[in-house]
Length: 108
Image (cartoon, rainbow, N blue to C red; front, side):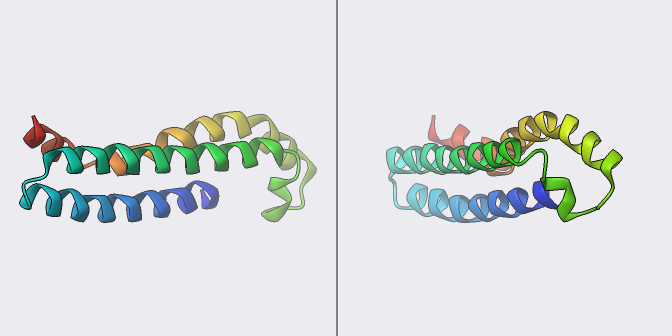
């Protein structure tokens, strides 16, 4: 949960920044710039999520020792790390997209 929480906080920060940026661009009458901002913040959030997922997969045999010294738990964490990596990628983009559907709908 700590690893997933770290990425979630980054994504929520992007969500807040993107919401303000898109709202300002729409208010200024620049829908193309608002659409570009949405695309860029999603791309950056996705890249960060993929990098964190790669780090988790690369350190899958040692990451559990930051939280517990148990061998059995370490083996279980190592087996579950691919699922965590997929979850990280999906959860890295989802908070950025939440709340954007109404803004995207107003662009069309």
